[in-house]
Image 1 (spheres, rainbow, N blue to C red):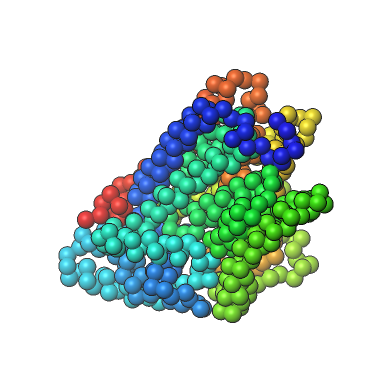
Image 2 (tube, rainbow, N blue to C red; image 1 turned 30 degrees about the vertical axis):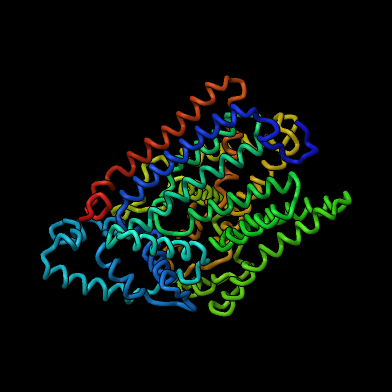
Length: 509
């Protein structure tokens, strides 16, 4: 393989029969991922503890063509769905209710009692403020359109609600497909890596994939952006620049916390472009980079101006921090944060990796995870990333220079997000906010790191390949299959009780 081209492509290095076989296997992975996501989306009742009521309300507002200009209460339309279909299973416990029994669905109650409870519940929801109104618009515009498609198809009530959540089925299947494209570009000669990355992506037990919210779309959009970066490293062109610019803007418009990831991508593209100019390749590079800047900057700037005009700052975060009561601490207090102790660092590191893999759902007011999984996922993540890190050093691994570059960018992307949330943990005083709090002042929402999922999987599966380099391909595949089977089994055991909940899709009238 030659490093002169930058990043090798599968078209040049992988025999056609192998690529044909890859396509069949990856199509199967996409199908399995779609079924996996569908079943678990259907199994979890509405509305979960990860701000799903707020995300739903925002989708309905966008479906009516209304983009909030400030803090708003839940709309009347949203309140009806919230009043009827909200399960108490996320926050409630049987002991909190009369007879130590969880409330049944409203649609199972006698008509008169149902109307009374509906009116009371709806009035309560209409008094709740939606502090997510300043979220980036792409997911909510897309989901609002998906809502209208469901209405056109004849879905109503609870079926229409779940139709909205089933949008994730398509996004996750696309995420698996784009993860294969990334792995094929970087590792065209290694079938274990080409297929290992999408195989792992298909079975990530992340509960954000089973919820309304922009985290899933965030992972897909940055995956596309990262693939565009890999192709840019091979050689810029105007058509590629247009696609890269649109993907770059879409990543930001799907979730503003993707900014650290985008900073790494922009830096890499800028350096590559400058190198092209030095090589007197400016007739190709300069128009491409200008096209990229235009396609990325226009939507980027438009949303930032909207945020500044309506929410008080360029990212839209001010409205949420004010509502939650966060304030920036004096700089002198930053180093007093417990993250700078061994115990505090372990809490931040382990809880982020645990929730990166498993999500943040609660069930009966307790984290929905099995004892010990926190440590398991943290160790798996640390070992695989550490092994992948060795790929940066020629004496420790036989990666090409272009592969080392991609591994470095992957680690930088994921590390930038991790560092950003560490910084956010340090600088804020959370006062009376329940999460993060003064007692637990850490951002440990791993779903916010999902934008970097594909770079993370590239490094992790590469690390696994290095750890097993003395073994045959079959042993590697069996090891990966064992890991995936173990993850899936843990997920099923953890979530099995959810499927009997009378509020979920399987129990709708």
